[in-house]
Image (cartoon, rainbow, N blue to C red; front, side, top):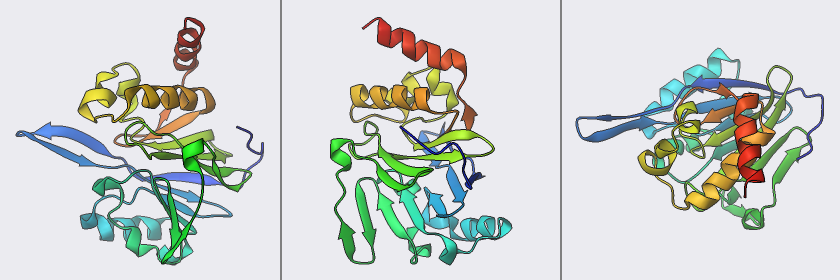
Length: 216
């Protein structure tokens, strides 16, 4: 995947996501991420109860809702979609669906085709957690290549403990999810997971993927 070596994009995680069991129920909210640059983007807008938090965090970063060009829901679960209606000036990408108002655009995510916004920013299909998950790939000056991966990765811990993404978060297609996880680990310098802080992809992580591929 070719991205320009220079970039005017910056990335800020507005809120770290979390997921944990409490008194027999799952307590969870998604990581919410802002990308600023030629095409401003917000990724995963938390629950419908988080409206004021998102508006406040954007203001802290000198951004208004109407400044956002693309609003992304990495997949169709409610904790990732709760405030898309704040961004009526933006094109929306929710899973494999691309829309603006009542206009729906045809894009072949299902064939593996990235949705390229510019040389440094694109949305790629990464199904597995659900059948229509997407991730955002952005080239930044500060972090290098960052993949905002939604629930393709639950949190950094699931690199060492696959049960977290397979069984705790749940996976509709483990084989597909593992394939796309490995691809993202190889391409990324940092990953923003769906329910935890951004983490650095180490050479050791990449080596495990490469060794696994060689042994197949």
